Image (cartoon, rainbow, N blue to C red; front, side):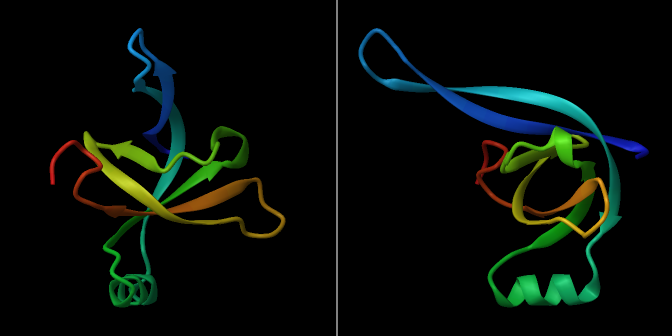
Length: 103
């Protein structure tokens, strides 16, 4: 693991007016950054996705977060894969409008 990403999770609290207000929490973890394969890129494109990266992270670090920050950009997790007999999982991510506050 030679790089760092931030896993972004969102929790909600109810304010004084009864409105649910989101709060982001970021957790920095180590990872291995890889390119998606050509097949992953084309299969994703056929399904309306824009595959960008595959992040290999330790299983214990990941708790179903759907947003990742990498080099100050946000990516949405669209697929998680756990290879057999290893202690890491693969997070497949796409750059997507709306994950960084812009469309």
